[in-house]
Length: 251
Image 1: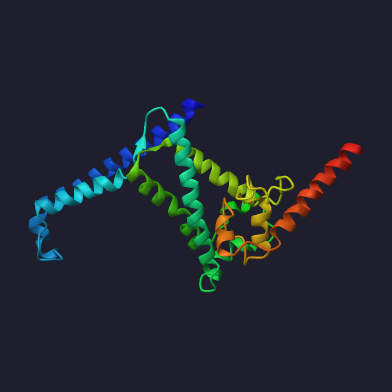
Image 2 (image 1 turned 60 degrees about the horizontal axis):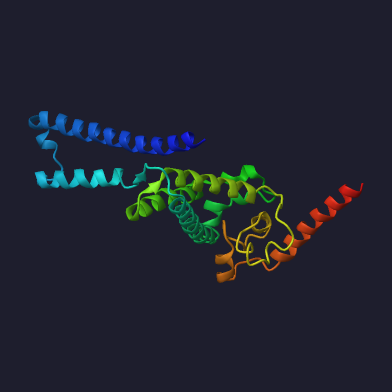
């Protein structure tokens, strides 16, 4: 399993190396062809100014930085740093998701960008990525941006990215599953109440004005967008499951 995890990180690093090779071949290839054909294409120049060597050097190093912006730590993971990176990724992603999601509910955007997802009035786990193209871009563009920004501060463990992405899809699918597995009192406890539940997102699909959070409830609570019936609905489902289990045991 550990070898497989390391392979994920190595694959990411390898992908970056491949992209840099592609860049070199493309940029150098075009520059060489155009230099060889310079006498025949001189009249095709768009601007009269010709780029200097300094211009080309700057473009090369900026392109190099762009390709290698996500710095991946290839060593054996330090557990504390790894967990810290995963937590930071989740917190940042949740903040992005809340405000992006809430924006998509604006009347100017909802029909074009988010109505497709809300066709799932009774969602299942298959609805996890059921997005219109605009929302698909809004949902996906942040993760690489977040990784790039984080890697400017410290190299990111490949395994941390692996864990975060696994957590993301797991929470997404569970949130759309239609089944509440958390226990009674979960939403009121200071130990667990800050985590979203399946009921939390299910209510969003039935009453779209509330519950915009992804992993955590704090943005909804802070901004007053938590469904006022959330705790009541959750407890009704949780107690119902307990009652059903009791009946099954005594049957």
